[in-house]
Image (cartoon, rainbow, N blue to C red; front, side, top):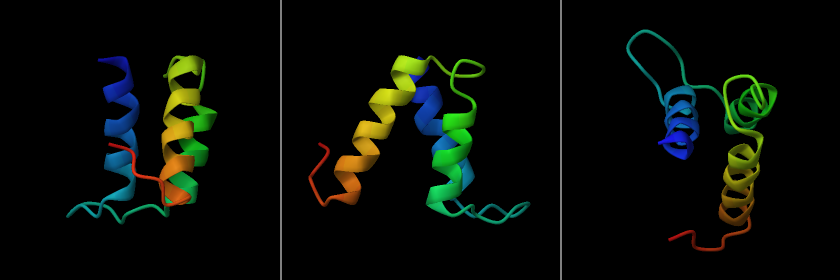
Length: 62
């Protein structure tokens, strides 16, 4: 549930919607990091960031 919330916000921020433009991935990551301890569990943000780092390095995440 809680890790899905982090992923859902990332998806919502980075996807184009009829009512808003997609955010650049770097901006979405910064926003999620800003919400650490406020909206999101810091440990889950850390886990999410590790997944993002692996993806950026070209390492399969599944």
